[in-house]
Image (cartoon, rainbow, N blue to C red; front, side):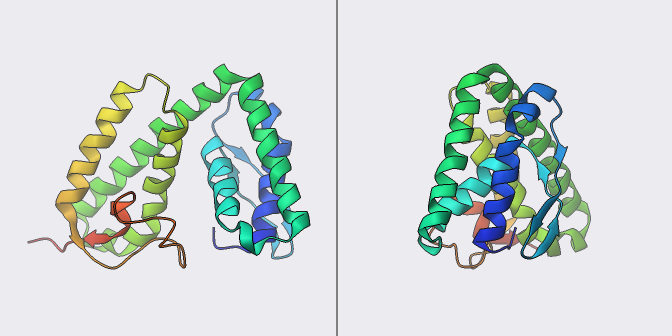
Length: 193
């Protein structure tokens, strides 16, 4: 999401405002409509997208004015309250999201193995792997042996496809994603032999 901090903040506030209904509704995806200075945005809400947006804002905290920092603190407080109030729903939806992200990532890796053109979209597709990392961290205490094993297998597969390259992650955020922590952002799929 290459938007201004104000737009990201408005999206985070809209998602946080619907968090209780989202958690109680049980659907993995919730279509949002948010009016922003950049126009109407239609993000799909998941817990991962909310965590990613609030994490993005925390990373950009120095670009926020004091009022925006206060609004971000309120979003974070709403997230923490929802997590404490509805821990079972929170964990269940995050686990479903982890499975969905794993499926999407597996599909993409299958695609680049057989379709050379799919390799051209690698930089944009890495957002899935990065969000998957964030979701798995949020589920650090959950029993996810199958999901962790599958991610490890997909990572082995990806490492076999990548050739080292310059940073391919979000512009201007290389310090946020160092090579040792987000290695998938420092490569590109090699052409087929």
